[in-house]
Image (cartoon, rainbow, N blue to C red; front, side):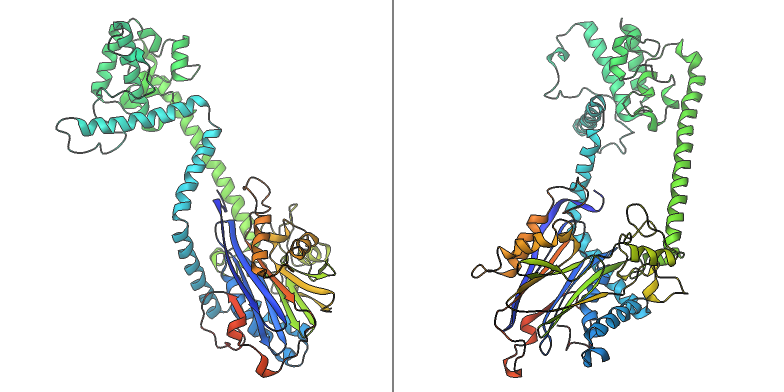
Length: 563
């Protein structure tokens, strides 16, 4: 089913944290997507009187998002951070992290994360793949004529019965080697759907017609008929009064209903009929093999010419399909060349993958929010939504201007060079190859917008940080109202509100425009009333008890800032 599963994975990974100043709940859910590409980070004691919360929404893979959750917080503690210039510290950290993604050692780490994720997905989705194939088969049947569906299952039943007959046959020690190398035709047991008119007590004419039909069906099922079957069918045709009804020269209603075609199949011998023609050109099940076993001497005169026409029509179709395939390949190569000049680099993590990043730094009662992409941070101000970030979309005027200046294009559906539907992100270095421009002016840039808000505990009681899987389904105000109705309930877990929010946003199926089908990650931070941000050192809780990052285990020398 493309990028979607046959059914959503609704298991949630949730955690709650609390200290003397604030409480935090975080949760994530894979949903309909084939994999979970989000990551998040909650550090209540990132530094003295400073907390950090972030959501990273991956695309093209989860490796950049997971690596960002592990490494980006440590980069924020730079020289600007020490000076209290938190806005500059955030911008510097974003750009430095993005530049590091093309370093060989980092690429090696990203590759290791990708391989580990791929292995985990293979283990988790083994059952999903089989179920998805069955669903795809049902979708195809929905568009097939009823005659084709009946023939399809009839052939399956006959093949199964032939195998059973081969096993039951005295002296039989093994199954036929191939479905095209069928055992000699034998009487088969009747299925429950067969009519009583096929009993042995029927008239001789009915018996002959039934035998003729059975031998014809055998050829349709297997594509190749043995000489013995051909002889038996010919004998039946010669001795029966109904020969003209089923042979290639007749066009009466019986022949048309039997084969599901207005004209008879091409006239050829069994030896000349290839297995690929067993279902006919239109796939309806009318077969040249089935008709050729009943040909009379008059048919043989035109068989050669008809065979040439039949084979030519197949070759023509093959050539046209080949030409169309070549044109599609050329178009794909042209599209890829716009994004990436080097084909080898297309599959390199950090170049063909990336992530959005929205990060909230709470310093005493001041909130700094850095954003690159379309994840979002919203603060509740007297139950009113206050957006602390803006979604970065290619069609927005400032974003479009930069993309065009860097040599890119934006499609009608808002995609850069026909690919990424974001204008800012970490990673995605296939879009950052203009050597004449700094990283802040590339088609896709990691430069974050930073907004600052002075918090007042009597007005702003919580903030929500989430990926676009939430915001595509609900507006900022709708999310604030959803949380506001639940956040003050006694003994409520903030993570449980996140879980309810996921269920509210989850689409019932994948038949729509994709809304509600994305990964979902959310962090809710509640500011405790009448509490000051300053605390003495002996009152601070252990960072291991109140901090969490959803990320892979990596070797890190910055354990003081990433827990």
